Length: 352
Image 1 (tube, rainbow, N blue to C red):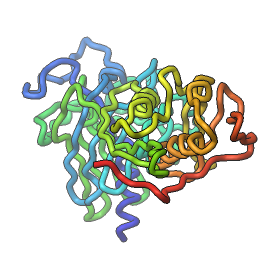
Image 2 (tube, one colour):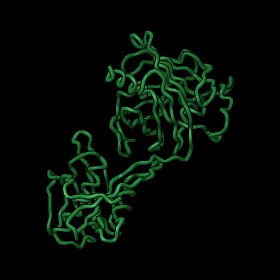
Image 3 (cartoon, one colour):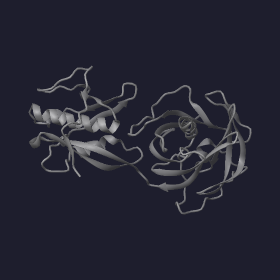
Image 4 (tube, rainbow, N blue to C red):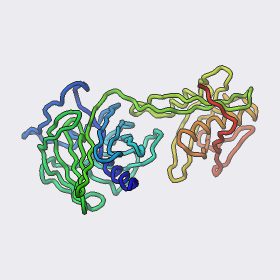
């Protein structure tokens, strides 16, 4: 039963969208959002893109209905949202195109940060559609009827009272109601099936908020023939890649008696997680080898530190390392395109 509840709420949360007030501080009361008769409203009015906005939703009726959202990336007509609920963390890519708000992709178990805006999907789901008027109707990707059922719905949430457009989705034995507010976004979702009612209501919205992650960075302790790691809290703002954060910490060990993993001019060219292979790919520039200046033992520890750092962050055990697009090769260690390095958490210790 708990599994079914979780699936229901993940489905509900797939349309819970992070967006923000166009202007007003978090202490301001909501402004008049009633549509004007002489104004032609667009999907973008009800789904504004804005960086570094945090939204918290209250859940009613199910433990997975509560959730928090952050903006990971914005580019052009796409936005990538991190949606965190008690069961999992999802990455959702939305697109506004041809008068439609589309859910392009939704990835579960998204506990890292990666730009997924280029995701492709011809079977996307349309969440909202122009013209913004009562009676506008379309079909979901699952063949269900979805339509604008009200353009002046009066709703109340912990964050305030609003006049919203109501979008209804009719399933075989349920209805889903989504409430969008001009210049705010989605503020309320109600799922009803028989006597079951589940709600997510906007509780608060905060600005200039990064996503905070804890990352374990590994370093060689060559003198003691061990690897040391330190857990660091990092702040990741909208459109900020994790690459630069990893570079910074691996160039600066927390203690003087630890060895650097990266030299001062080493750069990460590319870093990504292959979901189907459950493997991380990292490509670095040639300075990684040039600045290493290490014998085979220290080189092995440096590579293991890099592999453990990335493997831990992405929760995988395989890491492929390349240098300027070619498989890793130095005077001591070399791999082919089909080989990987494996994480190894033996003989390590934590720095508090």
